[in-house]
Structures are given as structure tokens and as C-alpha cells.
Amino acid sequence: MKAISGKDFAKLLEKKGWELRRTKGSHHIYGKVGDPARISVPIHGNSPLKIGLLRHLMKVAGIDETEL
Image (cartoon, rainbow, N blue to C red; front, side, top):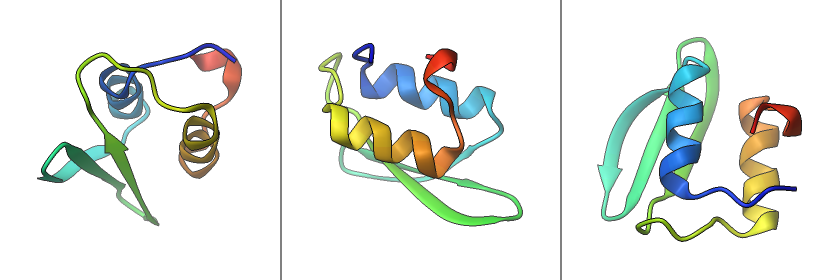
């Protein structure tokens, strides 16, 4: 799996229809109309997300590895 930063993952979420609901510190919270899930993306400059966190966020958002 390719490493991706929080900034880039947030852009990918927005392309997939997720909306930025609020920001708390360096965490951006995304939501989607009709989906009860909330996704909290840590945005710490250009540092990559850890693999386990990235896989979890992708699973919740319904994003496939090929879309990275």
C-alpha cells in the first residue's frame, strides 16, 4: 500500500463526496449526507498516515486501494 499524507487523503475524501464538517486542532472531521459515519483525518503537514489508520479510514469511507 502506498503511503499518503493526511492532506492528500482529505482531498480524496472530498472528491468522493465527503464534506468537511468541522476542525478541532489538527484533525479534520468529515461527514457525508445519508451516511452516519464520521471520519477524523489527522493533518500534520505532509507526514504520511500510518498504514493501520489509513486502512481503517479507507474502509469506513468505502475507498479501494486502487483509488489512491
